[in-house]
Structures are given as C-alpha cells and as structure tokens.
Image (tube, rainbow, N blue to C red; front, side):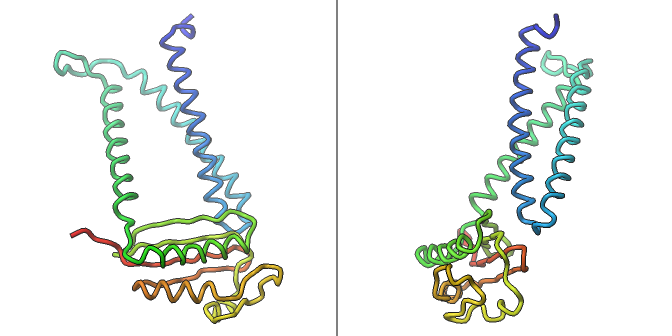
Length: 225
C-alpha cells in the first residue's frame, strides 16, 4: 500500500507533529489575545479565533496537497529539473529566512533603552506588584520600540480604575477605592513616576472599569554611534 511506504509514513509523521505544534501555538496566541479584551467579549473572541484558525489550517493543507502535484519540470538548472513545486518551496524558505532574521534583529537590537538600571528595575517592580495585587488573572509585560523611545508596559486583567480615581492616581498616599485587605501605602505609582521622569521618560496609565489597566513607561531609545 502507498500509505505504508516509508517515505509516505515519514511525511505523515512530520506533518502530524507540525500540525500539533502549530495548533498549540495558535491556541496560546488566541488565549493571550482574547485575554486583552473586556471579559464580556473574551468568549466570543476565542470562538472566532478558533474558527479562523481551523479554516486557515484546512486551507493550508489543501494548498499543500495541490502544490505537491506540481512536479512537471519547467526548466533545468545545473543539470537538475526544476518544477513549480521546487520554486514555491525555495521561495518559502527564503521568506522564512528573511522573516526570522528580521524578527530577531527587531527583538534584540531595537528595544535597548537609556536609563539607570536600578531605577528601571524599581519602576517595573512597582508596576508588576500593583498588577499582581489587584488581579488574579493574567498579567503581561511587553517591550517595544516606537519613535525614538522604548515603551515598557504592564497590563493586568483586574477591576480597572474609574476616571475619577485616575485624576488622583499619582497623589501620594492615595489608594482610591482599593480593598483595605490589599497591602500598600499609595506610594508606588508616585515613586515610579518620579523615577521615570528622572530618566527623561514618562508614564501613562490606560484603564477601564471592568477591563483592567495598562501602565506604559516610555524611555529614550539607545542608538549606537
């Protein structure tokens, strides 16, 4: 039987492993993306994401099956016959090589910030401590380069902060309507703001009641001479 051919079995096992790995990657991506939305929309977002992932995977498998049949030689190169399938695979390999190199360059070189190491560490400790104290859900830490600056953001899925509370968020000893059982003196954010501004940066808070909060620190980007 053609299915029991060693080459076909190896291809089937390889494809199965790839599908499992890519499927897990899709699930993680969908879960993380949906967690950033308001809680009322998270379930619907997960369903839509899973449906789109399934449709995309089926379309990809159909395209692979069609491409595998494009074996008729169209020209020869260095004594070797080249088909459309060979050209597509070669182009795909070049794209993945470029994409991987580009993403590594972006993630490693373009998010270096200027500032005092201990001060930035203290700022992040304050933001992470606040996020973890006010939510039992996911907390994310992200870094990105934008317009000559590096932005470090901490996002939680807690109860959020009302507009009235945001107006006094940097006041010393102000704890707003925080649960009395949650430890703290209302000094974390004022200290984080002072430290960020001392580095030539700034701090910004985005929050919506019921949808969590996102605190972003903007610092000057390091540019090698």
